[in-house]
Length: 169
Image (cartoon, rainbow, N blue to C red; front, side):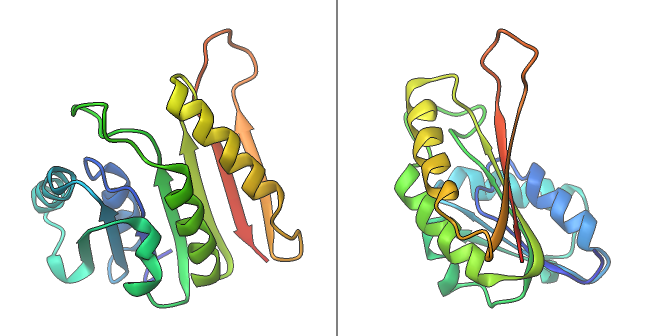
């Protein structure tokens, strides 16, 4: 919503960061994290090309598990798009334990009714393992704290991405 604050925990090439900035326009603010310098630069270029003023965002070259060091409570939305940086080497991927830490902290930073989305890619071994651990974690979240949904494509033989959606109560 306009004026809200949001977080992109995996900046990548900046698509989700730009989406959040568009949804919070004209005066919202977005923090975007990535451990890869090239992802931060890709995101910066995408935002500059979209004429988004730098006063509306902060790009953080660092691990999303440190979200609470950079973001104040009261965020409306937080997005994770797991796996590897599209267009880059596949040897650097998100790690389930840092994602779980980031999710725990992001939940505490959400305002009531705030949303977290996590897109998972189980089409490779690391992605399958990550999804298993994340699903185990979100199943353990107290239902009085968050609503948790797992959305997946059920009418295809192909292994496709799935999404976890959390909404703070």
